[in-house]
Amino acid sequence: MNLGLDGKVALVAAASRGLGRAIATELAAEGATISMCARDAAALERARHDIESKTGRPVLAVTADVSRSDDVVRFVDETLARFGRVDVLVTNAGGPPAGLFEAHDAAAWDNAFRLTLASAVELARRVLPGMKERRWGRIINVTSIAVKQPVDYLILSNSLRAAVTGFARTLATEVAPFGITVNNVLPGYTRTERMEALAAARNKGEGISREAAFADWEKQIPARRLGEPDELAALTAFLASERAAYITAQSVAVDGGWIRALY
Ligand code: NAD
Image (cartoon, rainbow, N blue to C red; front, side, top):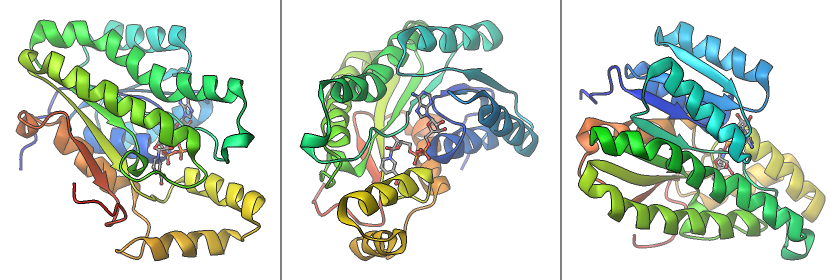
């Protein structure tokens, strides 16, 4: 299937490792030009070099923290200066910390708001004018299975990702007349460093070992295994494509059947 991504410019946030990196790699493999960011310059440069040499597509790496609006502005401005436009926006960030309600003070809620919701809003704010002008755009937010079935110990993530979903659903209606789609991809338990961090949090909170935490997750998943980052990336590339022009306002999970819901 030709996804029609050849020469499109894709901006992928938080892409030095894990899901963001897999998405940037998949989009580049489909012919897109990539601009990506993360906070750690050295890790980001390694990822940039790896994607560029694997795919032969130009990749711009901008050191930026998406929870800071000035960094978001710089990330988008540097992308526009180098490539002239953004056709595909993938919003992503690190996950907010795990923990029960009483573990998080007001500052933790504030940080989670900036990391998860404000980052997606600010990135969209910056790229939308150009997409509207060209009457073509794809916005894809990396959220979580938590938006359909909240995950224990992740009260910050469960709350803020629901807000991103409300934002995306509303924006999708506003921008659909301009040929712009807005969708969310919902990773289930996927093999990245985030899962190591969550296993460590469970070790601290529940006293269970890393192996027991992974075995427990696998037991909950009908497919009986964790997902791989490139499985989420494949869906993201399709939603970014020309072929997905009539798919908007959707939240699509890649979770091995974990969500127990009808839709
Ligand atoms: P990860 O921790 O493996 O990677 C996160 C990436 O984001 C890294 O490149 C990191 O450098 C970057 N990053 C973190 N905070 C940033 C910031 N403030 N600004 C810029 N870059 C930043 O995580 P992942 O597994 O790839 O997950 C990506 C997102 O998907 C997270 O929000 C996570 O909570 C969510 N998610 C992951 C899973 C999973 O099973 N892996 C499941 C559901 C949801």
